[in-house]
Length: 375
Image (tube, rainbow, N blue to C red; front, side, top):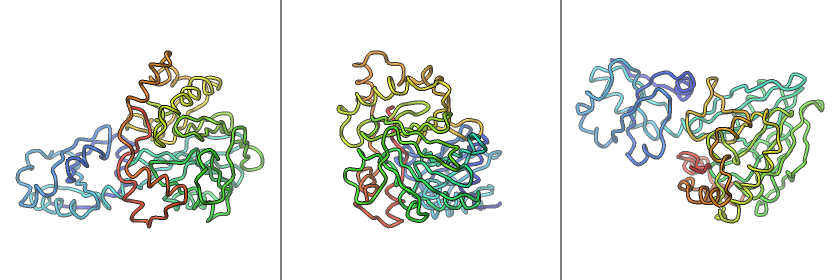
């Protein structure tokens, strides 16, 4: 039978379209349990590659005959070998081109809305890691928020749209992924903005992003209004864009709230987190559409592949916004923290400019899921 490569774009389409897919993941059990390709109608079998060196006969009865089968490993090589064996055994199979490393880096641009005067807002969904980046476009100019290190995705998108990148923002100093913001700014001449309270140890020049800053994109039509919102980090800053959208960074997610401990200061920052969520955000319009910097589970994706929900809806359904007792909130936050992100301290120092790992090292540092939320 046949064997072919399936790339990350094709897998992403299956995720967004809720198609069926059977994944044979040949990584070690711990790696699979920690992080896998998620899809609403995906089924899985995890059998480590080393258990298949003598042949695939032992798993043939566990594989479906009527579904697409995708073999997945870390970098591609092992999945090709297993896929070849399955093909020789009579199955039509695919292997994931580039493995989980490639899946971790793939980003899907999704248009989330029209802005005043003809502007547009795009969300870049990093399905394999749950990262969300944004591009605001108006009258030939663009701003990028929370860019990943795969900077070509953003510069190419801007070039195809015929717009000039003028501003690049990070809502906070990221600890789960390496920011591409500074690199984009250097390549394009754009202004790079970072909250100064998160930048006390950075080694580079930046524009201080502070509460009340207003940055205009295009011919003064689109306004990005900065709102100081500490809690995930001491400098975390949200944006209200065009009076329609709330870019909440890692403070508020669709199904959870941000964790306050990635600088080792959970007890200190949990009060800031509560003030931001229960006071600052309460003063905003319920009609604002929340656009976070991450998502945690595949259920948070809308039918069009975007991650977005009205603030008023989240105040109704998001458990983290509905704990009236402050002591209960504090214990819920500080006692329900997931493991720290992979290499998070190295990632923070890279984003400070203290470390300059090569590209392969950066990929290794980011392997695994984001862990920015309270469970």
